[in-house]
Structure formats: C-alpha cells, structure tokens
Length: 299
Image (cartoon, rainbow, N blue to C red; front, side, top):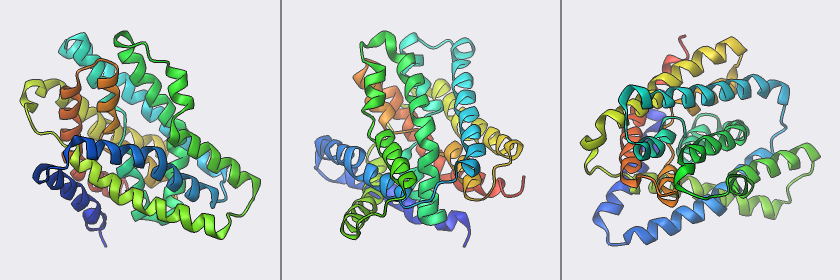
C-alpha cells in the first residue's frame, strides 16, 4: 500500500474534526478541554508506554538525533530571515516565527504508528524528546518581549518531555510493565491518537488568511519545503537508516503545532496570524507528508 493511501484515515479524522467544530454547538471550551486531556494525560501515556517497552540503542539513534538537531537549528535560522526580507511588525514576526519549525506532535505520533507501529512511536518519541525543548526555547525567546513567562519552568513541566525521559529511564532499568498497567496506558494511548487528530481539524481557521499571506507563505515554505530537503540530505550525510530515517523526514514534513496558537495568545502575540499559519501549514502538510516520505526513498 502506498504511503498516501496509508495516511488517508489520519487525514480523514482531521477533516472530520473540522466539520464537527463547524457544524456543532459544542463551543471552543469543549475542544480546549479535550486538547488539555490529550496533552497532559493521553499523549504522555502513549509516549511512556511505547518507549518503556522498547530496548533503546542510543548508538543507532545518535545519527537521527544529530539530524534532528541540525534540522531545528536550520529552521530557526531560516525563520529569522523573514524579518529582513519581509519586514513584518515585531509582534507579527515574533508570533509567526515559531510556525516555521515547530511540528504537530499529535499528527506525528499517529503517522509514526501507522508507518512502523510501536517501534515508530518509540523512535519518534526519542527524537522529539530532544527537539521539543529546543523548539520551545526558540519560540518563547521570540515572544519574550511580550511576556514574563518563566522559560525553564515551562520546559521542566512539559508533559511530553517528562513522559519521554520517564520512558527512557524505565527502559534502561530493564523493568517489565505490569500487565494491568500496560493495558490501561495502551488504551489511553490509543484514545490519544484519534482525539488528537480530531483536535487538529477543529483548530483549523480559514478566515482572513490573505491579510498575512506573504509572512505565512514564507514560514510555511520553510516548514514544508526547506526543512524536508535539509532532513533528507542531512540524514544521508549522518548515515541515518531504517525507522529513524523515516522519522526524521516525517518530523521535517509535519505541519506546525496547534499549540503554537496557545503560546502566542498566552504571551500577548498575534493569535489570529498564528491560527491562519497553522491552518495553511496543516492543509498543505496533507500533501507534503506523503510527498516527502516517498521522495526520500529515491534520493
């Protein structure tokens, strides 16, 4: 089965979430509550379960981790060039900056599992354990002038980082997961993927995109064109192969994170601009992900 056909159920859930939000009266409060449940409870359970059951070979993972590090740094640098090239306002630049390199973890974990099962989720989880803090540091740094948020406190309390670190430590300890606990967190993890994709669709915002078309277009091109190209050539240069190769290309081709909107609003940024950027990135990401995963196998 082709990668595009393999991903149709995931993209269908995103569209279903969009229509649910558009044609029901559940309100933003419902979706916000569901997003918090996924982010703080269900996704951490999925990550911990997948990583804790995996025998981690850091020698094998090292080239992929180096590739991911180069990838994020490249995305941050390319995003910064929007300022001298397009001359946006400080607020618009600081808000949209993060959309060029942050990635949608919900969609990434779902596709990782679709492509390689629990091995894919574990590999993706190890990679994001490295890059999530870097992306958060860069994003908060750009918005820092609009907020007094404590960066290090936010990183230490990040549930995805905590789940990844806990899973790695449990795996290294060589302890088995009790059967009842494994059943519980497996069900929580399964629920997280479907609910996460529905929330991605519910967050899509199509109003007034043209107002910020130049800036949004630039950041989207960095995320969905430049970063995948960089990931493929860097992965080959570092000798990344197998599951980890697919995971670094997937990471690069993912649309931007829906949580970028939450961060922008919380830190006094331009929320509507970020929401528009997320929407455009997600819509084009549905094409970019299967495209780059297929192209990477021929380069």
